[in-house]
Image (tube, rainbow, N blue to C red; front, side, top):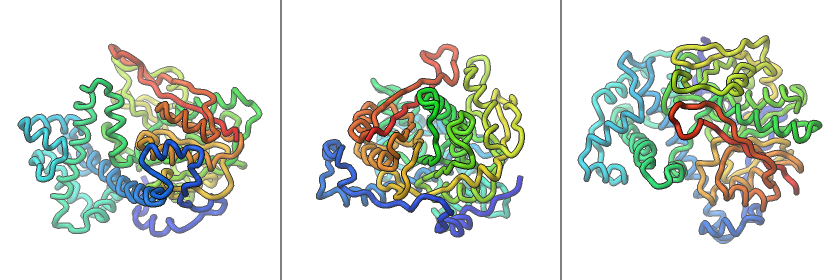
Length: 463
């Protein structure tokens, strides 16, 4: 595997370069931009007089959430990585359970409420992994994921003497969230709503996986069926992400990659919605590290190493349609032939796709806070935003949707997978009503009340 340049160096070199053909830069939104949904915004306590201040405050808070999300991934990495130590990997949720349930009732309650001064001792095996991480990033390295997290540690904790303590503090913060999500929320009357509320305050994750591309493919197939003559040329992907270190199941066999831009491109071409020579795909992310990565990928076509995140076995069976999607993935954007996915260890499926230079040149990347900003330029025929809207409360969601719909061309399609009822109300008011929805089974689990599935919702701009 060829090592990539340091993400910080890449960022310094690329962040201020606007690729030819890319969308114009972001502009901050104004009160008039939410005219059709001002009642919802007012219900969130924001008025015309306070709107500008709210937008600035939200933008600053989102920058903080980006940093916190990066540190969430760092904790997942240091707990699971096999590159920094030979010690057994630690499953984050189980670590949270052991930590919190070792406390007495009073300390546990104070810790879960985030009271100041409550800092339980970090378990020895975790302290050992923190020390191993710091040792690994201090040595010469060519592992792309370790390079990434090393640059993050350098930026977040410049005082080397305080790093062990600071990382211990981040571990405790992440364990608090995981325990609340995996164990406290599940005991509530409405577990899904309790988890959703937690996500509206946590760090902004860069997680991405092959499964997200599957529901987008399904949605685009519906678009093709409804309008066989439709053509897609300009595409915006909001929050494409980067597979740095998921909460569980970390795989380190390949460098971090962003799958969604390639998955959307592959789906458009394979379904006959667009031609590679006519496409322009803009990937917009609030995380500057993701933007830098994507700009580098556009300049140097990557080889994607895809690995499903679901472990097939006696109790879990992948759906036939999902398996077929994984097998076909990449045929429309690869530099050569693409073999079907192959079974690998632990019931996973893997495949490799070398992205063609022509496909890579279609991709541009932009820095964008979708809650407070929009891209000013030619509107888009298709906007995709999956797995990002759950991070926003209703007021933030309203602003994000106003920005998204403003960038959509007349007759353009907005694709997402957020199921909140208010989203339908907001998009209707913004002139982008719901047209179709589909629910896709990804896997069935023995003894479970329902299969593992995702949903896709399609809106068309009517005015």
